[in-house]
Image (cartoon, rainbow, N blue to C red):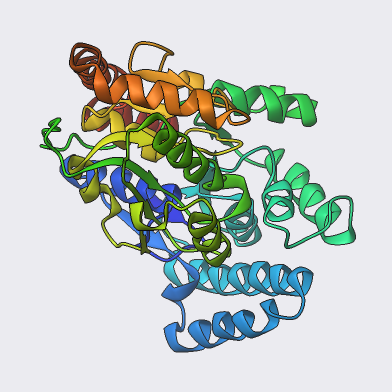
Length: 377
């Protein structure tokens, strides 16, 4: 078959769902004896690209819009150069782009090369909207519109699109009706089964993994802890991830008098290894496409609490593998969490159902083959 090239503006390793996705897929391809190449901006001139990206951290202190533009432009620039260097015009390629900028870079070097270009939709609604939610760019501003226009332009030039949720497929086809004519398929994220065995004797109760930013809404979890304290059930929360909201969350934890119950661990290279040490995965995001952390929780047999937003209902069912909790009512959230922690029969049922859901719907041994088949046809 054609050689598979995974194109991404991200580093090869990291804690994002995007990085987990393409590394899981490469692992699957390797097991199948299929060659693949990962190309990133850092595949070109590592030192120079790190310098360019480092400058962005300085710009970011003064102007979010310029920072986002700088980040996008130079990541695209170096990825394009890396792809030109890596791709041999004598070979046939399947380029699997991980975002619109990666797809743009692939399309820009397509001339003279026998290749098909596919893109997976990891983002929520639009990358422009994600930057706006982080407070980096203005909605309806020039950069916001530029990103939206680029997305629409790129999507219609692709050989195929992979959506990780039906929610996102519907959202994108509503926003860009032309997408209904593009070859596409819904294939959820997947991971390989872990060997974890959760137990009610675990040392900590609550776990949350994700960047500390407004969209992830970890402040809700601190309010849930506070409400639990009022119920007389003092629990612990582990927050894994770095981001702009850390100091704000630390101050809120002290204000709510739950500071001694919250462990801020920052970025962790292997965040998934923390699941077996916790009883419940508590998700507080305001929007999700197809969260890999929720899938990792299922693979560990850990009950989930998350809001019924975006593609979350496609990952687990209310009352079966966990519960949907209201992000505007931490008191009710505390009651749901308390029920899971205090009712051993319920906990066991949710845990067993979580493992069954994972094996049926998200196990790489079954799902990755569907992605490979789509890319190959």
